[in-house]
Image (cartoon, rainbow, N blue to C red; front, top):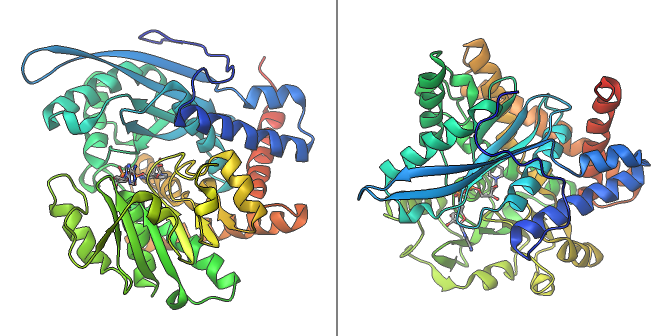
Length: 435
Ligand code: NAD
């Protein structure tokens, strides 16, 4: 096939350096290993699923506003397209590495499989700190990145979406680039687009709403009402803010919040719409200066004495070094990979209930799937239709995962991986290995 830019067909070895991205990849692989053992997976299929199908590394020259030329590195990884086209976000962050993108792409395969979407797993990223660049510079970089990965993306190949530090604006720039380069109006090439360009109603808030939905479901199964729940949320971006909002609307008390500017506590509970408005007006989109809050550190937030902890910022936040400090009996993973493998074992041994990322934050990809369907059909649904169908997909997934956890006497994370790996392996088996 046609591929532009240097292509690296990476056979995964163990990560070279210790960084959160390689930790995340190692965790994703360890979880695959666990599921493969339980399922008695064929060793060849297991090896195939441990590596991404395709890795594209691109070098991106972009002019800064002052006329100097800067060069960036970008990635697009497709882990498995056994069940359908790749699906996964694009992340702009200084800590983006190849290992991180590979690990996140693998998690997307499992996330699409656990929610039974006809999609595979992919992820992309560019390593830079967007806070250091103007909007125009980021637009040029996004468009150049899109042009560089165009040979391997498309509505029937791989459909990107927003992730950390990217949103509907970036998706609109991607639609424009693909439209300019192909000559065909191409809204179905990405999801998470603005509504005016064919985005789905309810997509922006879908991941956070899904996180809240599974949190309320776990509380309900434990015989707890939302009003009795005190919640701490790490990260107040797309996922954290909408999860906090939906939980507060259900009656839960959000007593601790944090973002890049630090942590904030309020014993009586935050007014979440007011906190969202504060972050929206803040030039850096943070909670800095939030009224009625006492300052705490990020470490203190994670160790809060709450019923539910929702890490919704970045990966590798709860590690072997701080897992002992965690006091919440329930952790719902809003972010991808926020708990390292060693911390996961320590918390599970202590009886902490962990709702894994591939289930907890799947609401975003479920509504992305709805958006892809709507864009391809050029027929758009009302918000209540999106929310009703989101709830059906999330409920079906959580019911199945918790039932499997009983059958195999394992944690919800292990059960979610068993469901997902079994589905991907079964698709491979039915297709037959090519040629
Ligand atoms: P975002 O950029 O909108 O928000 C990230 C938030 O984390 C910001 O509030 C930022 O200030 C905060 N943050 C960054 N570093 C921090 C730190 N060291 N301590 C505390 N807070 C910190 O990103 P997002 O879209 O909300 O994504 C958050 C996580 O959820 C990521 O792991 C992402 O992969 C995952 N996720 C996102 C979606 C989605 O639809 N956006 C879907 C599934 C999973």
